[in-house]
Length: 360
Image (cartoon, rainbow, N blue to C red; front, side, top):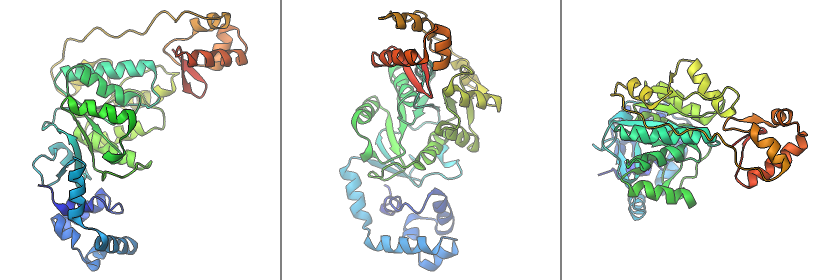
C-alpha cells in the first residue's frame, strides 16, 4: 500500500525528483522525510526559502485527506517501495517518487517509446502508426505522451494491433479533458494505462514536459523518434533516453521538411537509423519479424476544383514545399498560391506545416 506521506510529498512542488533523491539517501523513507526538521533539511543543501515553504505547507496539509481524495478520483498509486513500481524506471538518475495510475500498468520491461512532433506531416503520422502496430505485434508495449500528432498515432497503432499502450502525462489526471480524455478511456478499456508522477490537479507548464519525457525513456528499452523539429521537446526525450542508457532510433525524413530536421540530425549524431521495424527489433536484440506491406504515400492528388487548384496540386506531395517554391513551380503569383492553399486547407486537401510550408 502506498504511503500516505509519499502521496502528500508528491504534492509539494518545490521538492523535485532530484531533491527527493538526496532526501531518500539521508532519511530512507517517506515518513522520515515528512517529519524532517528545518536543520536537517538545511544540512542537505535545501535553500532557506524552500525549507520555510515546506514547513508552512506541511502544517496545513493532511496526508490522509489527500489519500481519500485520490481514492475518490479512482486513481491507483505506486511509490518506489511498491513491488509494482517498474524496475526499469528505478535505473534512471532521478526516478519519480510516485506514479498515479489509471488502468493497469503492465509488469514487463518489454516496452518501446515512440514519440514525435505535434505538428506532424501525413508521412510522420502514417509511419508512427505503422511502426507502433508492427512493434506491438512483435510483443512490445508502446509508450508515448498522448500529445496530438505522432504520440496519438503511436497509441492508436498499438491499439489497432490489439495491444496495450501506456500514456505518460505531463500534468495531473484531472486535467485530462475533452477528446484526450475520451481517447484515454479507450487506452484503459484495452488494458493499457495512463500514468503521471504529478498530483491529479496539477496543470502542465512548459518545464513539466521534459520532466515527463524522462519517464517515457526510463520505462522503455529504446525510443523511436518519428519526426522532430530543431529544437523540440521530442529531442528532450531522445536525450533522456541517452542519459538512461537506452537505445535511440530515428526515422529519416526529407531534408527539406521542417519536421525531419531533428530526426536527420539525430542520425547524423549517431542515432540508429530506423528504415523499418526490423531495424528497431534488431537494435534491441529481438528477433526480426516479417514486415507488413508498407502504407504507401498517395500518388494521385485530389481532383482540382478550380484552374488555380489544377495548376497547383500536381506540385504538392506528402513532402513539405514552401509557398515560394510552389509559386515558381506552378507559375502562379505568390498571393494566388496562398489564397488557393487556404481554400484547399479548409477542404482538408492540404496541410499547413508552419513557416509557409504545405503538404498533402
